[in-house]
Image (cartoon, rainbow, N blue to C red; front, side, top):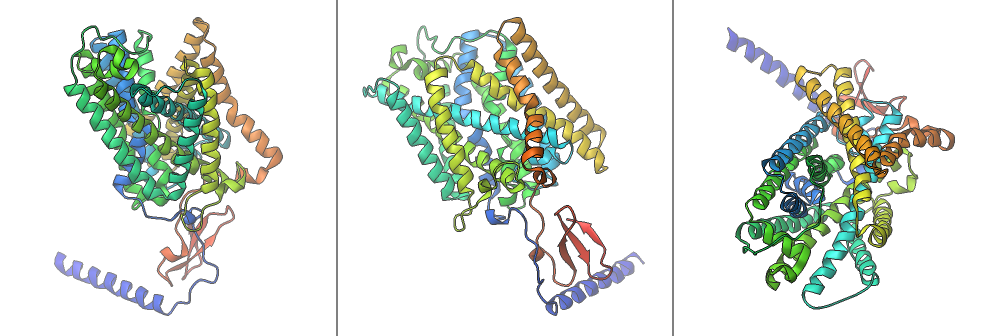
Length: 515
């Protein structure tokens, strides 16, 4: 009896499909086809490996291993250090899970900025946009400046002394120019190049930590604060950008699946290598690597090891610079499409299909910022890093709140996602409160000022747009949508609704539903 029912149902489905295919052959092409706002980027071209490479390169885990190991060598926190790394990793993975609630449903070029719009107000969305822009630009400035320092450090190890700030500024400019050329060259070329570079750096640093020589009296590395919250913020800063694969939803194959995997896998991998670095530092295996990087041959390390460490870290800095340029340019592209920034930033190269104008401006801003960084913050980057950390935590906190409201609005909230999102939002808000209180208590005003600036940025931006470009506030939240060519001819017609978003109108009734 049941097999008969399946047979009847199967014949009905087969008949309907055959009728739809026959109807499609006799249907004229749409007179006014509708295209995705992100079509010019070149849809469906990035693989799972490309996306993971993008996220890993932006994080630059090889450099994170060095600095986390240096902190543990200097502060000697014991098992509390490993616990802090594990706990922070768990929080970042929870943030990643909140992000995947959007990446499983939307493919966008604006990442968190585009996602938050679907759960919070326009002012909150602009706050996240400003925070993301400050975070990625700040990370890009930092890694670009460190790339220049590290490059000249290789020359110093080889006996080539280039004194003064001129060579540093020139090296930063050369790195920025190289990054801009590679980024404009093409997204697949860039993601595969940075994955190869970062993978080699990670393997090299890992091997040196395992098999490096023991040095008597090794204590190299910067002097650090002994508090575990400082280590937690260092881990957060070291994982910043783990979600950068979400900027490439429109360019990914099967984006709702592959982007989500990349966002979840990256913090897990980074957390694992950071725990390994912490263990290596506690057991003494990382001492030689840390000393070789910070003190060179003066630490007692061989010239070969010093050069190997510096090359590995330099390559990781370069890969991170490239990853930031790719992600930051997509953020500017999404904003340019909406009109919340000058629309010229939405221009895409006809042949290479990359946002070349956004790439140019982002790398130029990074180069100028790197020059300022090298002149002002190279000795003590704590205020600069703190500002970037505040921007990152703010963006993740608002994303978690948006996740709560978004899932509730579409009726897909569950106790698990509600608890996780609320927990992330509470941790983020608590961390921001701690930074403000700690800064006021110790007279370190950079943190409270950073929280204030990032907090009011969305309100100020919205006020400016209402006065200068009010129509942009109605076009926010752009994401990759279906096109006329994605529909079977004759099954319906794709039209733009009153809000400018595509809607499918059925051929039989004329009724429409959002795409």
